[in-house]
Every structure is written in structure tokens, then in C-alpha cells.
Length: 336
Figure: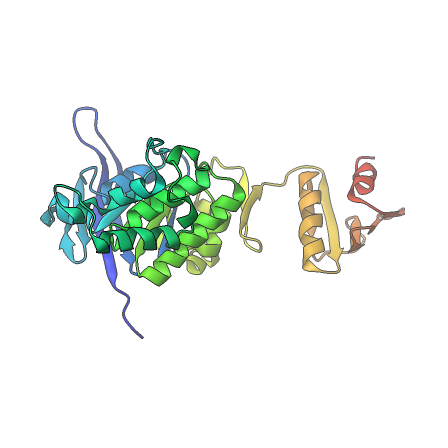
């Protein structure tokens, strides 16, 4: 098996803030970022994801430990050298409404164009390529201020692409986007990692898409620090349950890869459904009403719900049988 190239590695890293008002946020962090992989950083608000990303981008000094980029300590690189190796996209919306998309993306060539910033043939080819790669070639002449949030994020990713960096760091790149744009951006980043051979690390709260598209997960918590691994290894090891800590009232659904509210309250129902789609949405409805769904139990111990279709729901108790033609009708029976 071909050895995967390590782009960045941290050993015993401590991150936080220096000075009289400084504080240590995390200590003893160990990790690797690999060429050709999309890694998603997950964690609760305020746990230190942005602090970690700023440290990795060297915009904030590390407190202790060793951080290597392509096998060398990051401190051995000049600012100019790092600008060719690490690209960064922050959460903040760019204030570049007066620039065209082409002009904004062209700024990403600055590490390669020298003092005067003149674009040669290769520079222009790279800009055209990046615009095409993220799917906004048709917007090249548009002003940034005219773009949707999703288009603006694609333009910022194109700007990083033209830097020709092996490592790209993104802090919540889908934070202000609708669901379709979030999926598009995540799929784009995964494709760029694979096709361009880049190591891409992004923080996100979009857990569902992260579990589908990320090659590796970094889980950052106050209690366990940073836990890293291939996505499926992390999920099946049960690590997602610790992501939001003991204060959380949500549970991770291992079957569907989503977090849902903890079910407490009215009772239990034995659920039988003719297929997995019906089972999933029926369980969703019953959980919302405060009922925990049982797969196997004594038929006489709990009420039973048999779902043959969305228009045929048969609810049985010890004393009665009711056939419903909708969930609305079922809810009325449950509330009696």
C-alpha cells in the first residue's frame, strides 16, 4: 500500500493565548493532516476550534510542542514561504464588494507575482482554472458584492486555490449558507482534496455532511482534548456521543448519523414498519411526541404500531385496535 504523505503534523501541541491575560486552551494535542484528504474539525461553541486553526495557520503563536509543515518546523519558514504553503479561509464575510470576482481571485497569486503584482500568462491560466474548478467562471466579471453567500465562498476558495498551497485551512466556511450551498461547498472541498492532492482541514457545525464527506474527523472537546481518526472508525467507536459533553440533551443516532433530542416522557411503543424509510420517519414522529420505540419486546407489554404505508398505520393496545390514515390521526389517538 502506498504511504500517504503527511502535510502537517503536531506533537504535544499546546494552544491558547500569551500575556498577562493569556490562557491555555488545550494541551498535548497530537495529529496529522494527509495529502488528498478532507478532514473536518467538530466541537461545541467555545471549545477552541478557531484558536486551533489560527495556531495551525501561524497567525497565532503556539504555546508549546512541535508543529511541522512538510517535515520542517513551521518556524523555519519565512512569511513568504508559508504563503505558498498554507491557504486560509476565515468565517468573516469578505469586504471586497468593489472588486470583481476575477480581481479578488487574482489577489491569491500575490505570493507568486512579486512586488509589483503583475500577472503573467501562467498566473492568468491559474486564475481561469480556479474559477472553473469551483464552478463560477460565469461570474468572473461580476462584482463580489453582487454574489450570493455560496458564490462568495466559492470565490474565496478559488482565491486560495491559485496560491497553489498543499494545505488549506477553513474556519466555518459553510456557516452562513443554505442547505444546498453547504452541500455544494463540502462536496467541492472533498473533490479538490482528492483531485488536487491537497490536505484540507475545515471546522464546521454541519455534522451530517461532515460524516458523509470527510475522510477523517477531529473531535475537539474540553474533557478529551483532540481525538482524530478515519470517520467510520470514530463513529463506530462511539466517540460522537462525547462531542457535546455531559451538559447535552441530545443523542447520536448511529443508524442515521445525526444528533437528535433525548427521548423522555410518555412511554414505549413496539414499532414494526415494512421498510427502513417508514421506520425512520415513524420513529422520528413518535420520538417527537415523547415515545421511545422498541424493536423487540413482549407484544402484550407495550402498545404496538404497525406501519404498512404512510396511509395505513395500525395502533394496537391490550383493549383496542385503531387504523389511522395519517400521522395527524395517530397523534390524536396517542393524546387520549
